Length: 283
Length: 308
Image (tube, rainbow over all chains, first blue to last red; front, side, top):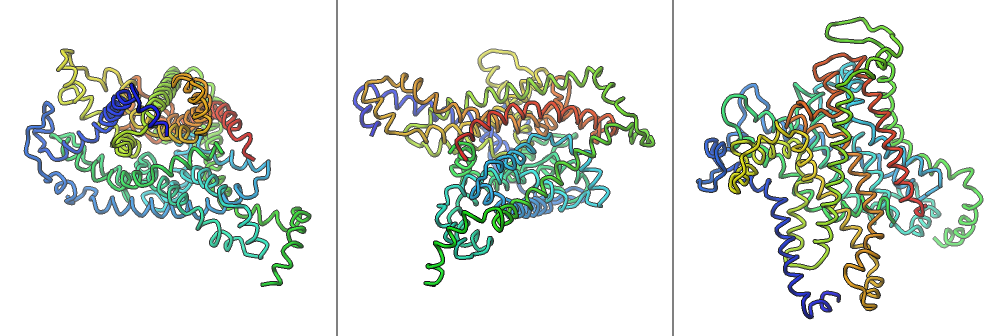
């Protein structure tokens, strides 16, 4: 509507130039990643030299980084550990956050805002302030170097964000439907299963994907608590840094492999993720 | 079925009278598991830290844990490395939040118009946010900022400027660059949500009235975006105040780039093993963060004002 209006006259050129500027900005933001991909197809000698595009690309580095060498963390092992810790923690997050967000969205009693605030405020506690007690507790319970310790911590890490986002999606569920189901005597789980979850499914999926991304990318807890075993993908990426010899091409290949799952997840969920984040505060 | 239909109005009437009785549990129960889990995992470690901070516990050299009151706190007030780290934290957080919000807003305005390949450009721009912080830090350190093989230095060379060892010469600026690169997309998406929620009839009316594009932006769009800018600042601060990974892989906390989280890490399980003293540091960090958070949450409270 407005595009037509402005298309008459000087508008066309402004639009074209601004479109070009947008493409340029997109290129600049994506360039480091593009360069990472280019370097991952070079050999070490070409990658560790003045930037050039004059080379013959190969996928050999990908083969090298995925081959297990004795004593080092294998790619398969790291990806398995990461997949299990991030998927299981995300499922637990949803299991805990869905009922909580439901309570906060459907019965918005004034003082319940305090509960919401409590969840958000825990995100302000610096991780490092708790890493020492957590490390001591984990050692006490024999949880160091296990997947379980990461699952527990990633659940705690993502829970506030999930409650926050899900609450906003649940607020869009028509109250009449929930009330009708409750009057019919449907149990809490029944209401969630038959009314809330089907309607808010896209929002739940987006929330889950965001939790998955944060858990997959997490490095600090992983490297501090699981320095010896049950190591995850971010740690595997850094094991490709070597103090002897060149490593940039191999490191690039490992970085690309490590990023693919979450980048695709993020591309798929981009619109909904942010709607959830933004609507959580602004209705 | 018809029975329930008949009973419905009665039940509805009851509902209004009952909330003090049957419903409260139905209301509270769903919240409890998440609440208890969060309390256990965030408050228990905090209380443990408070206790440790009052002891002289050291692992290296092994020292018996003794209660020493507030000695650790007295010691840290005179610690200049601690104050340096606090200052680095402030600079790092403020600069990266500021630049990513400004750039994110500008890019959102640029993308909030129809042009060829809009979706592709948005997808390209959000990708840095999805990368592992470790990967992002390493790309910039080894491939963009590298003194010999970095693309940035290659460009500088091309325009005739001598290459710079960015990461070692300007550690803070290098890390802030990576943070801004990763967080601009996040801010941009929030601002896009804001721009797209503008009531189109109001904009149309202003246009019919002959208001210029700039006038519309200043008088309608900007006030509307204010809450979204606040939200973006709040969420950005929550995450950026805790930055660790990028520092860890880029400078390893060298001079000028040790923020508070990294500082506390160094004093405790990152090699210092002075658990008592490190706990005191972390308690101070928490208190300082809560002061910032309190301010931020007040902003958030305003956002939620007409929500309930």
